Image 1: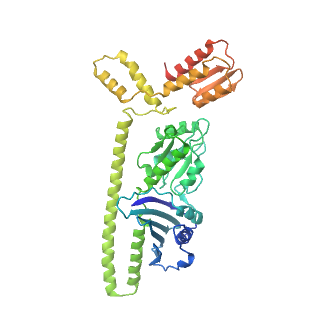
Image 2: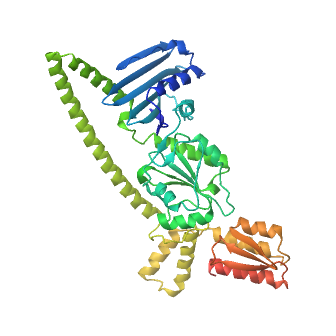
Amino acid sequence: MLVWATEFPAASGTHADDLLDAAKEWLVGSPHSKWTHEDFGAEPLGEITRYKKDAQEVTVMRVTLDEQSWAGLRQSWIEKGNKEWVTDTVAHEKDGVVWVSVRLHCNLLTPGSRLPTPKKPYLIKVLLQRLGGGYDGILPIDADPVRLREDEVDVAAGYMTGTARNRLPVVYVSTDWGRQYSLDVNRLSRDLAGMAHVVVEPSRQFSFALNRNVHGINAYNGAVSIYWPAGLGAQARFLPIRFASATELENAIREAVRVALTHIRPRVESTSSYLREVISRARLQQLRTQGSAGWEEYAQEIDAELSAVRQQLDESEAEIRRLMGENMRLQGFAKTRSEGVLALGDEQEFYPGEITECIAAALKASRSTIRTDSRWMHIIEDLIAANPAGEGAEQIASQIKDIFAKGGKFGTTERRALEELGFVVTDSGKHVKAVYHGDDRYVFSISKTPSDSRAGKNLVSTINNKIFGA
């Protein structure tokens, strides 16, 4: 069973045969094998060469045909008598570009064995070190995160809407008002190198501009989302509050990427089965050039059969694309049913569930003006029941009250507490200006030294009324 996979372009100037040197270096340095450089020879073009040592087997394939080159290496070995591991790596070179594919299979040999969750193969690190990473669309294959500039809103939108022509997923890490991230972006980028691109947002203001370009599908305020190639499938969103630690969040993201890559169809030219077919075609072409009439007739029959097979494959690929489109349509329908009946506008949530809480509160307030036995009341009651009241607004209002409860001086402690709630606080002389989530529609002036004990209570009422409308 396929348990790990990826595919990426190598750096400019790389050739398909360079893959074999890197893969052999990986085998020689592996703690799971006893291979040495002397165990391998010079594998001829157009041939399948096999090596065996202990319980391991290595198959090497090389071929050049129609101005394209391929090189592939397959390693198989048995772990403790109950698991067979097979690593397939193939390089396909065309028009100066080399695509590298790595696919790891685990076959269970005994009943009751559990399929393991594999880590990223060390082979990927060796390949990136030896071959280097090229460009996946406009995104570099690199161990460093892509840090967006403030003027790259359109670029970020392309990653999310599938117009950037990348084949690997994009992991988008948003920032909070303090320009802090919910995880270690450098570590995550190293872990996902060759698997996904880690793209980092520059500021909270950036997310507001981006929100308008992508109709609200962007991660924001510390959340992380995974966007799939060509806009296929629904994004996977990860909210930091749902994880006990940054490490747990990173593990969840890595696992989501791993599983997704095992379901993404590889380029046909980058598979070992296609490489074997090309070797067969190259052999037939060689026989044809030898001038035998019998071989020519045989080769024509083989070509006709392969052409029919390829036509069937093209038709199957077209049907797969149609089904993927239908699946996306159904996913959109399911998402609409699960997330509500209203289309989102341009307002972006300041905390998870804010919009739902707002609508639920408005519906509850509307009940006093609607006839109790009417159809509208039945719909409203149904929506209220389906959307239980959240605690976000209540918690924020309570914390604001606690900050100003004593009515004393506004100092460092109070400022830090407000900033943790999303306020942008600046000193303006005798007063402090607090802007809720940096939105100029919600600006509050706070005296550093209140004139009386009621000032704190009045300020709490002003802030909460402005934010929550009641």
